[in-house]
Image 1 (cartoon, rainbow, N blue to C red):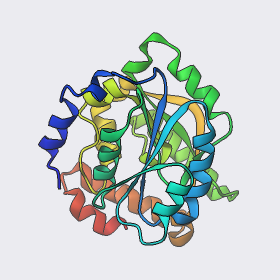
Image 2: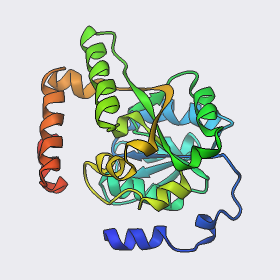
Image 3: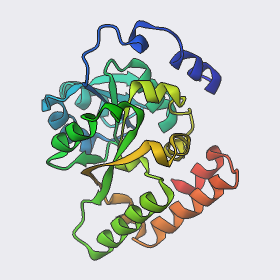
Image 4: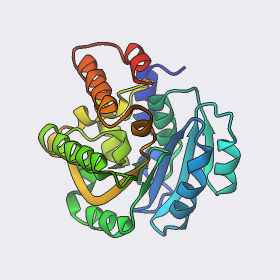
Length: 249
C-alpha cells in the first residue's frame, strides 16, 4: 500500500495531468469510494453522468462483492480498484482524475435538485480556486429526529468549520495538491483534510447533499451521533484512525 510520503510525492510530481495539459476548464471529476454499494450506485451515477458540468464519474472500489463494479461500469462510470480504506480510495481517485475540479461524494448520498446552479455560482468568482466547498447535510428521512440532526451538523460546520465526507467536497485540483490531498487513512480522512484546509478556505456551496439514513435507522438518532462524537474525540486526542475504525463500523 502506498505510504503517505509516496502519495504526497505523486501529487507534487510535474505530470501533464497536474500541470493542466489537455483538460477542459471548469469541468468536474466526481470521485466516489465504494464498498458493496450496489443498491445506490445506479441512481447516483446516472444523474451525475447526465450533467453538463461533469466530465467523468470515477468509482474507486475497495473490493466489493455485490456487483457494485459492474453496475458502475454499466452506468458509464470509470472504475478504479484499490485496497479498502476511504482515504486510500479517495486519494487514488484524485490521482487518476482529469478534471480541473474534484467533487468527492459518498456512495450513499445524492445531490439535491439545483446543485448545478449553486456549484456554478460557487465557481464563478476569481478566488474560487483558493477555497473548497461543501454541501448542506440533509437526511432522506421525514422524521423530526432527522431535522434535529441536520441542525446539529449545520452548527458544527458553522462553529467548528468541520464538514464531513457525507456533505461532499468540491475543490480545485490546485488547492487539493497544495494542501497535500487526502491522507491514506481508514477513517477521519475528511476531518484531516478539513483541518488542513482551515476555516478561511472552507465555504458552503448553498445546495443540499442528501444522505441515506440507514446507519441512523440501525442505531438510532441518538446512539449513532454519540458514537461519531466519541470517535471524533478520540481522533483529536491522538488515537490512531486504524483503532478508531473498530468502534465506528
